[in-house]
Length: 440
Image 1 (cartoon, rainbow, N blue to C red):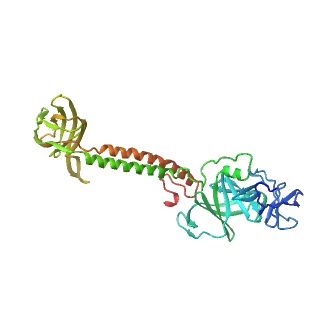
Image 2 (image 1 turned 135 degrees about the vertical axis):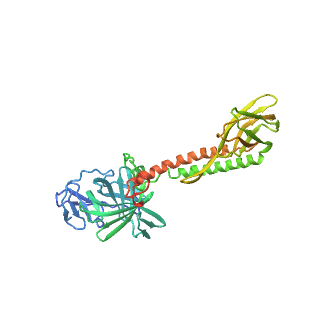
Image 3 (image 1 turned 45 degrees about the vertical axis):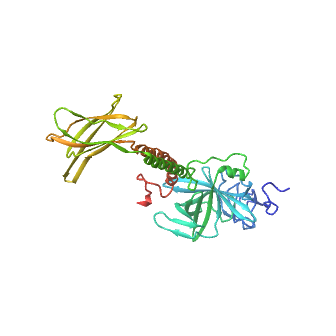
């Protein structure tokens, strides 16, 4: 009977047995003919797997690190069976602080090798590439292009092998180092490892821990990711676009309402008159002729325009229903000043204002206008008063746009925060000004 992870066309063969020439412990070679070196699990010696006598390459110490996926574990990835045959701990030092991650070597005699890496719960499935990226660009933030995808430089660091166990398709020695350059385009990470004159490119795909657990049939759930990893997909990436799409629909509806409002609004001038006010010590008041506000209950706009020049007038306007005496009062000040100083010409204030009274029933009305104020030496001022019935209202739409923009802004924040945390761990960490160091 074929094991669940196997297929008749691609079975993982049984291991060949040897003894460690350093300590005599039994060693099982799963990738005989493929493996270049093997590390004894009993004494930590690094052995030459291509030598019939397993010549000792380097004496070491017994590995104390525990793989999250035990060596010998078999699983299925993309329909093919794989067996975990190697495990190593890789360390880099950044500003005096060491960071370590683990890597796993998986073997299939018909497909070769597949690699897994794990850092604080973040897993990547890695495949070696047989070709280089099509294009590389330098500059402050280098990029590379592969299969039409642009990858941004994330980090360059020297990585050391600090612990190892099992079989490897290269001659492994503790302390070996490579200069690694990582480029990201989530969920992918493109890495170049340089050792001597040889450069090897690999492509990693970010993979959730539960997918790894299921693929290798692990009985215990793997550690959940901590922090943000270099090529971890942004879980909020599509949120701004989704919210912005809804924002667009809402804006279209709002514009349609505005057009309808302007089209249907009568905006009829029902009263207009010019006044001249003589400055006196006491406040002055004027009463207009009655005017008719007909039609449905709707808004009334009152426009004020004055010839004030380096002067001001304060208005108290009372709209009074002639039949019921109901009064609606609003106040406004018109002021306009201008001059010149060392910085040049300047102006302040405005000579015209428009006020709005909402939901005024039909009826016969008049206005009581009381004015006061003015600069000393100003004897008189003129103003024009205009009353419009059923005037369109624009403030509501402006406030609605602002209200609709708020969710868009809030939707951008989680995505931006996630990206900020991602790049904070890179060679291009943002500065306090919001720019990356290499943008200066």
